[in-house]
Length: 168
Image (cartoon, rainbow, N blue to C red; front, side, top):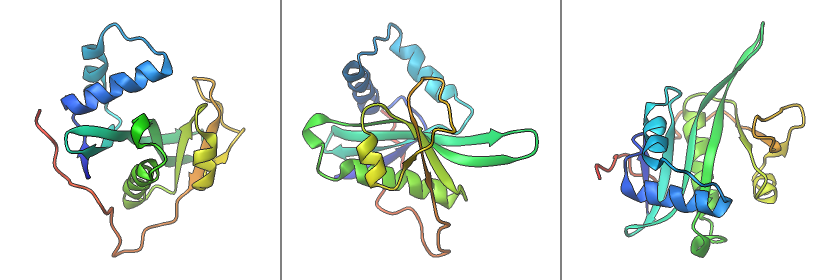
């Protein structure tokens, strides 16, 4: 197994896996090229970890920083945008590992929490410390889950990844 870090979403393995993920959700896209171009043009720091078994994608987690602000306060959180594990790899710890990498990325940048929406796996997230927060309203209408993230110890870092961006 290998885990790669992406900020360029032209990787063909990621693109194929993302399309399968959307098929599972019943989302039909007419212009995939435009979707991936939008991901690459995102100015919010869109990134992903992709776990590979040889050339097969085991799963991915796509995330970015998100600033919540009001007239007096601001808070920066890590936002889990998209998250998918291939059916044949589910229940084997890959989702937990990928979520841990994203949370570590957030912590390494000083974010005190993570936020996501889900209507497919709330039990998975609650087992990993997320809590439903009815004070948030998501534009997609899904329930919002949040998790407080402790600060990283100075010697800690994000473990278990390869920090190279594939060129294909």
